[in-house]
Length: 185
Length: 185
DNA sequence: CTATGTGAATTTATTCACAGCA
DNA sequence: TGCTGTGAATAAATTCACATAG
Image 1 (cartoon, helix red, strand yellow):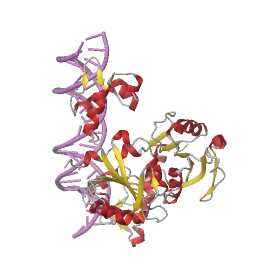
Image 2 (cartoon, chains in turn yellow, green, red, blue):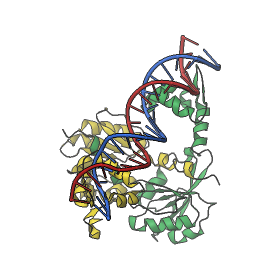
Image 3 (cartoon, chains in turn red, brown, cyan, orange):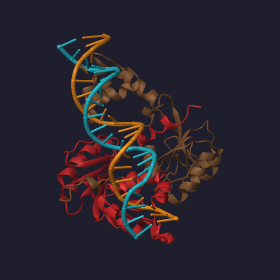
Image 4 (tube, helix red, strand yellow):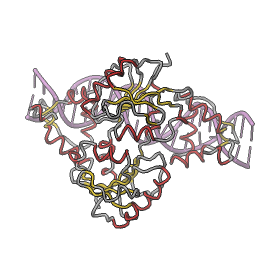
């Protein structure tokens, strides 16, 4: 996006303005991971991007599986930008016979009961987009299949071995954070 | 959920175990807002719930408007638990003629161009679930309509007056947090 | 005797201000 | 001269340990 603007490097103050921080916050944070910048010039955008990708471990492709191809799952499949972060959705599963076999964006929807056919080669990450009652069962199956990380969109807290990282996004909980900030008028 | 289990009060250690914290973290945090507990007993669940709702300002109903009734918007409408947090989705908007006029969960989908008919009485919060190109325009219209807080599901950073609180949920960014935690094996 | 609430100690994060390099 | 990188100062959050109330 910045390279598209023909820029080669960017200063900490420019980056700061961009994300509503101060320039020294940017510099300090970067400095914890190494010396990415050039004094008097700024940060080489290409290099900075590469460094950050390495730190976040999104420098290699991560195969990702989606479970639940309802409205939410379909929205996720259509979401833009997975590729540019190195994610590749390699498989999708659902329990609805009407959906199994359907092809969405080059991905054939498979029967969720066949989650056991999944192996660690096919995916190291998973996205859960099923109703809350099904969430724990799906999580268990994913763990068995060797998944290492789960993005959970169901409003149910799921229990997994502690080696596995879970990030849960509960829409209602996120919405509930808003009123705190709005003045009661 | 706990009252459903017939419990009247709960100790800080029980709560801690529940959310993977220590008991003194729970107590310290609560103590910043007041003395909610009873020594030797614990926290009265009913009262604790009421206090937290008051702190988060979700003790009164918040009318909420949804913009974008595609897959993501539909998923949000179907999401369980809005009511129990005091949210009431009062209106939905879309730009698709095929959807305008349709009734989903007692809510009639209105033309997004009629967002100007919305007033602050009808909603103080909004959820944006439109494609990224439309996000800023929708945000502008919502601000004009007097909305005070926005939950933004589009992967576009939106600009609003600083009086208005925005929480952005970008699915790809959240997914991108996972690889950092998974061992490279 | 149990479990809260909180001062005090410790650790961590934030902020500043400037030395040092291109 | 311009912007990074970082020690030092300041502020904040975390952790402990225990007095205190039911």
